[in-house]
Length: 168
Ligand SMILES: [Zn+2]
Image 1: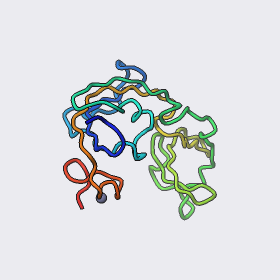
Image 2: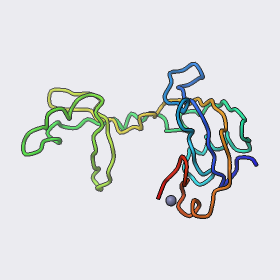
Image 3: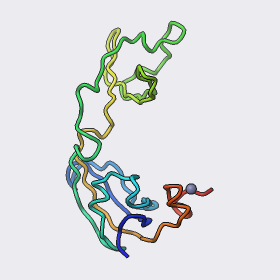
Image 4: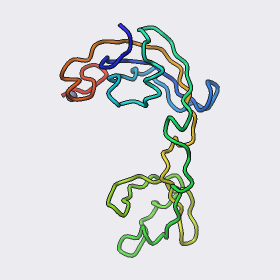
């Protein structure tokens, strides 16, 4: 059996920035492996392309450029807004406008999005709507932990059931 569409794949991986020696972002080492149904759009397409055809026990190491991961950093997604936008009953709640805070917001069409407070001035703030990993080249190393066919209910739900997956 090899990794292909509709297989339930479990992998251990370590994600670093840029190269294998880059800053570590996350790792499953010492934890449960990442489990997902292959080929149903749950993962980055480039991530799946690099795992396609591997068998249980195979190791992998590959890079995904930012443009094919979470996108290039977009300067237009860093917007300056008046602080008064965050007032509730005429007052800005304590602690919400601090650099690094993630704020749930809405655009003019009512779509929910999350922005990070990037800069706080006297009466203006800059909110960054880029994905936190925008502009970052990803580097994955790891090993295929297990592999099996997805069952029909998993394919219908689009997620993994049982150990390492959804229980319901
Ligand atoms: Zn389900």
